[in-house]
Image 1 (cartoon, rainbow, N blue to C red):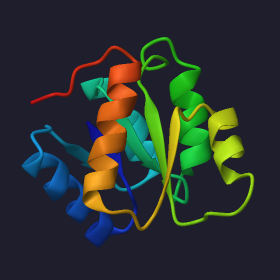
Image 2: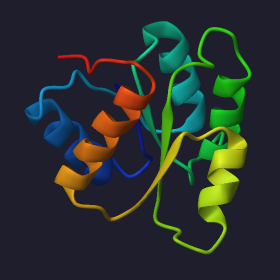
Image 3: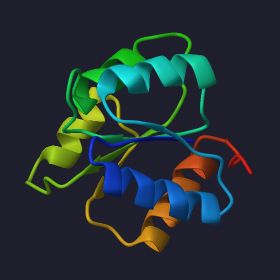
Image 4: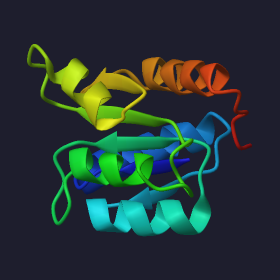
Length: 125
């Protein structure tokens, strides 16, 4: 799994809880790093903050979904912007799911498992 968030505390919190829940986790702090790591590691799922430096999460997701190497990797949008229409915009960019931050760690793990099950993936353990 790849966790992408520019806010170090949030990224580390999600990564630690997901590791505690049995997932192998890599981290990225901006959209360019997310692309590089996704192409290198080909994770089972990507948790993508949408407000990122260098390349934002919207554009990074579009690039991932338009590349044969990564188009099948499910992307869960993580955002602090819970405005009306954001979920539809995220899906339009290629996100498979949308989670509003802050979220309870258990709820995030449940959503990751749900998305993985929908895409026929099994979580990395």
